[in-house]
Length: 115
Length: 113
Image (cartoon, rainbow over all chains, first blue to last red; front, top):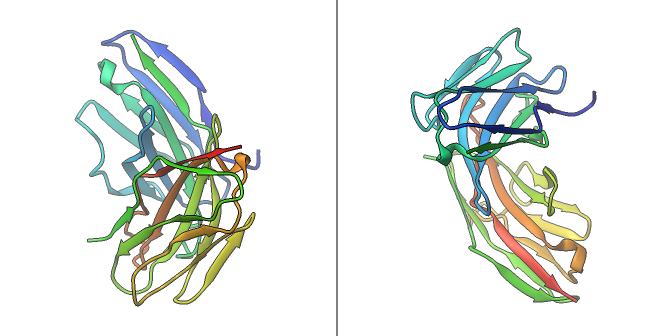
């Protein structure tokens, strides 16, 4: 597809379960970002990839959160032992990192609900 | 460090009113500046951008001018419409390509008919 693709679009899980969220960036985009957006709130930065490496993991809320990117393309965000406060929309975005003027292209997000 | 500060909302205006949403930034050198918009029920999308001092980004009747002297990138529109109701985010991309893109907290705009 032409845009950033995220799956699943919706995920309902029980407290304590692990979840895995997937992001397929635009082909050729080397930079990939994960953000979290809670209801009515702004964007909370989680982690950023340049290729397969993550120069900045400072936004991950706890050690229950991890992310990886393989082949410079698909990324997965894993949340272990989910808690109710993890409920939010998780957004992925990608960009051409070679140019400082490159904007981010966002996916439609994964809405995570922890019951 | 790099940061973006934008005016808190919500902002409520009547249709055809003039809109300004303030955005100021802190960064070294010459970052690129962006405004993103999130319409109700939709994902974030780029509204406009500017990459150097005195550049003016424009789209859909919105404008923002990159002011280095005041480190600002205020969003303006001369006559808003109900369809402009959305959340607007100011963002900064540092000159150092290893530094992450920074977003403001967003400003919710309500336009009344």
